[in-house]
Image (tube, rainbow, N blue to C red; front, side, top):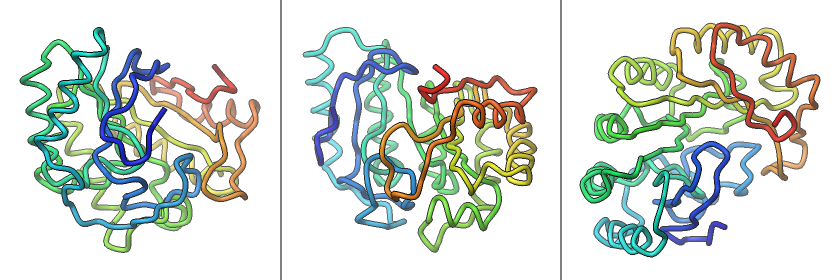
Amino acid sequence: MLIVNSIVFGPVNSRRLGRSLGVNLTLHKTCNMDCVYCECGKTTCLTNDRKNDYDPDTVLKEIEEAVKKEGHLDFITFAGSGEPSLFKDIKKIVKGIKKKFPHIKLAIITNSTLLTDKDVFEAFLEADVLLPSIDSVREESFKKMNRPHPSLKLDKILEALLRFKKEYKGKMWAEVFICHGINDTDEELTALRDYLLKLNPDKLQINTLDRKGTEDWVQPLDKNELKRVIGYFKGLNVEPVARKLS
């Protein structure tokens, strides 16, 4: 269970990543988006400024202590209650993990917005698995669903992710969160499908609300609705992660 403002948490027995040690690189709900569905709650620090909420050496020390204590791990995973790429020295953390623990895979769960930043781009190339979220490729729904920091530009984010995929040697498991009434229309899903076919991730993970989101009006899709959505993504390796279809 994630402890607010803790650096290391878990290990978590993840359906996607096995026995995974979580690393939280930001203070609670520091993010550059305030997604309506976020199960960690409302973003309290909406920022696009990259800084260190923790000392990088302290982060690496806590990870090392946890690895020694916990024994077998399948993954070390950057996750938690904010966007990991906002940590300014993320490249140092990635390189330290890869050097100290070459036997453990590194996964990064990200909203993919800061791949436009050279340091983030280069740091993420070192991950064994990247799990970027892409909920919409249309500006109106992106703003309504993800409520991004005003400095974020959707077209630049989408372009950077395509460039990243061309260079990336690891596995990419893209995730789309489906929000009823926003990105589940024919127009939205067709545009998203066309982009994802260009991106060609190793897996496309379809999700919807499992627990209470930030906004009360956000409702999960039912089983039939999810099956309809999945039908749009023929030609991609679709993996439903919503418990309704598990």
